[in-house]
Image (cartoon, rainbow over all chains, first blue to last red):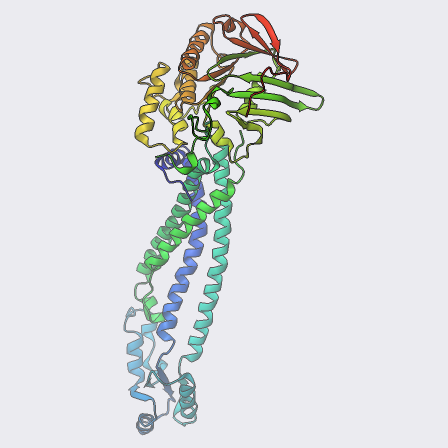
Length: 295
Length: 264
């Protein structure tokens, strides 16, 4: 399909050396497009991790009214222990809730200055994994009727919102991928056409000595492929650097907020992007050089 | 090993095989009623007929615009005829598809007035490209390029950038590129046009050496001094037709009237 003989690679290297400014500009343009795509993929990757973490929380938080007494709490605990599907019930006082929330906070920070009364007492209920969302909803509806209960949080609505967010992120990534595809075609195609014009003399000589279209195009396709791969690789490097900076600045706060440690793009995704860049670059160069110099 | 795509264009000419031994006796080139014009009503070639035998050295001359360069361009299919046939080794060049043209050109070495070298490439690279398109292994390319440069008097200059050479040296590189593939036919389109008289004679000498090895050479020139150096066949293009002149004596005008019709 593509002639990767030493002649092709030699001519491609020569072309890259001679037109390095042109190629550098092209790689820069491509990396901007790929950064957008990589950033979208990064967000989707982490949203999916969050969704997985919270999708079936397997727990509920029963927030108690401020006037709930210790006997109310004991009665509730005993009642909950008898409910099918409930595996554990644990009481968390206001002070304990405050301690958990401010555990990783700066002692002089705003959150740490809040009084214990700002955090409602709660019963943390662990639910068996085989309890369906409908079963959990039924349990909640019964609990909400109890006088000592202020509110019940099962995190279902939150996970539903999160799932919608993930789907939206995937759709946005697909749109960005199309934009990146068009950008690669436009940038690499026009760069290669420009390079072809600058190397008219070379192409003319190749034609005169009996080179086929494939032989003439081959180094340009290699150059286009390299541009695409380098554009994607640069984007991943730039995004990686930004990720490291943001991650180091916010340290454990993000993890505390979302419940999972933020992670960078998985290796297969990063390598896949580079491979995609290479393939798109090769395709763009090949399409852009449909009409070669005729001698 | 050369790949499938690089299969040579020339047919096998071994006795008893696909072609009879008489095939080797056929003319290498045959122009039959060739018409070519660039403007309506002003044909450059009008019903031109010409036969070139294998191993001939033929000068083409004529006034400016007579059609010398056109004739050569038709041969390597940079242009197409309006009418007529051009048979090169038995195949009608005019009817070749675009995909077949590269294979035609691998059997024809071309030398031009403006050298047509890639200035940024080295001497070696400019010559080697004629073999690289054939897919030959590098070891073979190196040895054949060395031989070609030796033949044109540029041995040891392979590493020099082509752009820094003198005019005469650049033309030698172009000649080396034309002959490195051992083509059946070498076309020279005013190869001495940009050179001083002494250099022109040196270059002509090179072409004569090439011819002595059996290659057919067509040499287009308007320089009459070159025609007088050796008693070669001279074809004058006049009024769109080919007039054969040998040693200054006009003999016959080829006008579609052949003594023996050659079987093709």
